[in-house]
Image (cartoon, rainbow, N blue to C red):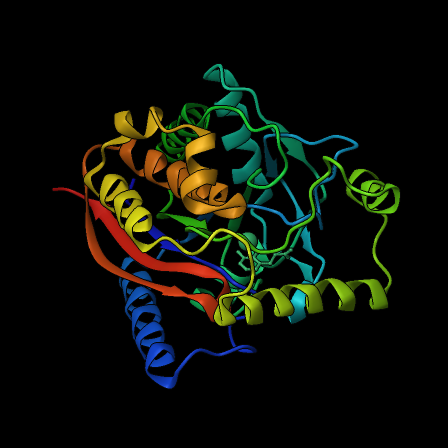
Length: 313
Ligand SMILES: O=C(O)CCc1cccc(O)c1O
Ligand SMILES: [Fe+2]
């Protein structure tokens, strides 16, 4: 079945804490190119790989991966709230096939998702209810994380499952690349923060506003060079894009989580969504990158990339 891939960094600061006009214009041009690629491919199903930022997944039970047979956006950072247009039948079929292929997978019949899922749908499709989606959560912040080869295994299994559907499937990755925004960590957290990370009690509007302000302040500190957090790392980001673009997934299998953190910062694990999407595409043969945009954008706390790829032949 026809397949294609788009990789897209996300940042909730897009549109609110803008970099220089020229940067915004270059990003807009890259997004327009990706939209044209998508229009041309004309998908009727999007397998969307995205992380979560303690809005939908908590330490009370923290799965490495989760496929939603239904999903609802919490609407953080002004992203669209409400139900995603999940194709429940396709989602169940894919989940069943993945399990059948000996890859363990959690499913959720009411998955809560945040800007990580919503932003790429807004950017590429104009909203969360305009195209059929199978949302796949990939843990990219909550340690411990398993080896990236398991992400590849999941991506390949989903790619094989998608091949059996009579659909035009776009594999869409959301997140990355290098970035280290102020996301809370459980280890050493004060009791109230620990409770929030474990229990996931929905934040009050005031609490949500405070969290969003902390991220904005993080961006201002990044721009000022006073954040004390891992700097964006364009060299590393280019290495990641080169390797995924070449289809050298055996190389990816050797990448360690410690290396991700040292080179790309705590949220560089969001690159896992890109690994999954490329593995899905690779399940149907070799592929070629059709377009690639990259720029380090401290205003968005993002090594920001947009790529498109399609199978050879
Ligand atoms: O919601 C949060 O805690 C983090 C927000 C955030 C900021 C910059 C880049 C990202 O990819 C991102 O997700
Ligand atoms: Fe993120």
